[in-house]
Length: 322
Ligand code: DGY
Image (cartoon, rainbow, N blue to C red; front, side, top):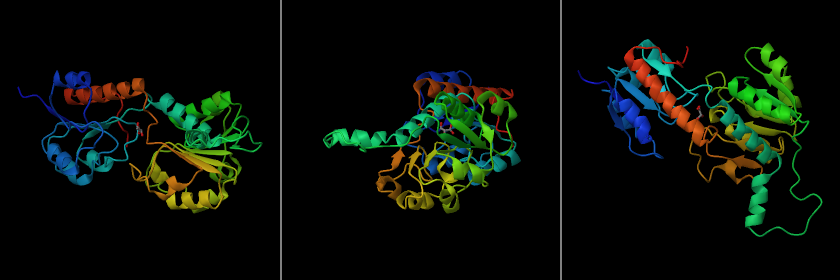
């Protein structure tokens, strides 16, 4: 009997490949840090029974419609905005992702970004490296307090909750805005639900934690940044598309807001000459929210399991629900 064919869009550790090879034929793009070219992905999808992909692979309607044998797309991520879910659903192709397993790790990074931006840590590192540290000065590199400040979280999902919990350790006043209220979270964390305008107008830190959808596209626009306090810091570790980067640039440059900590960008990788990166009050990271050794292994194993479950005709543990 022929085995099902799985295509992996990125080089994965041997044990992950072997797990799949026990039940499948496996093809793999052999580079770890370079995404599979679109034409290769398109060709592979014409014969694959399953796809193991990452956030940087556009799985669009055209290649889904040509994927005659495809039964499951398993992405090594919680976000799945790179996949045309409607096109997949129309062809009964399952989509699995990795929620939960990366929430705490991503919240750690989000908080690190918040702290780095608030206390101007990257600027301090540059001062040392460039031998620019002069005498102690009363207002040298002064930043924003984190303790007892108001943390506004837009999108109170698993990662939002994990960020909020970290905020309680700093005695922060936590407010959130979400599609629906979360009474359990309010009780457990002491977070308070507010309308979006109130969150923007009163928070010292505005943290976007929503998935990227048509509704959240550029939700942080010029108007939103203008509502924020001019001492506030904007944090994004979800998806770059939720932010109008031109509007963010203007807000930072004009002093409408104090700073930004960004782990995600509309076009990744962001080019080093992007205007945002020229600003000293931008702390930027290369989309590493979930990048701890432990968590990335769990995500890879989970993704391989989803593929095996789907191909065996079992229900994958974490299906994207439409
Ligand atoms: C995700 O999982 O969606 C992150 O952006 C990458 O880990």
